[in-house]
Image (cartoon, rainbow, N blue to C red; front, side, top):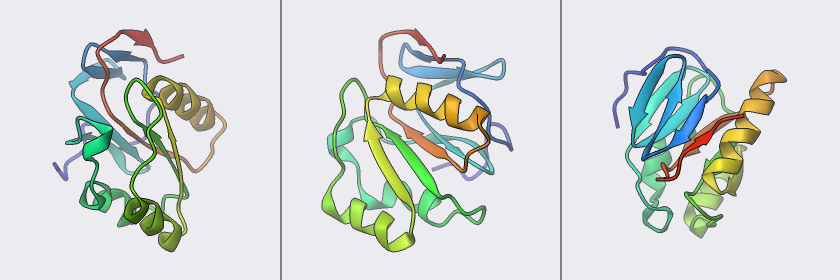
Length: 130
């Protein structure tokens, strides 16, 4: 995990697909983590391989994340029990859904000024973020 953000702020996702994401005139190949403190590259590639350690930056965020949308690729995949328990214990909501739905929901909640973050596994097909 790279501790330095691509951008030191939360921004809307303009598009997703082709194995990455576009946001604020930038593009990133691979999965993405959007926290209050910035936009980061995120190592996970497949939802079935998610580990608790993949969420260390989310669970330890000094900005205080209240809710995380988890984009699990082309389909909704529920994370393991240890991941779900860690979020409950941290008092952080976790909502798994397909990456496209997570991007769209994140953008709406961000526009509403809600306390939301997202962890997005990249997908191959191309779509607009709106």
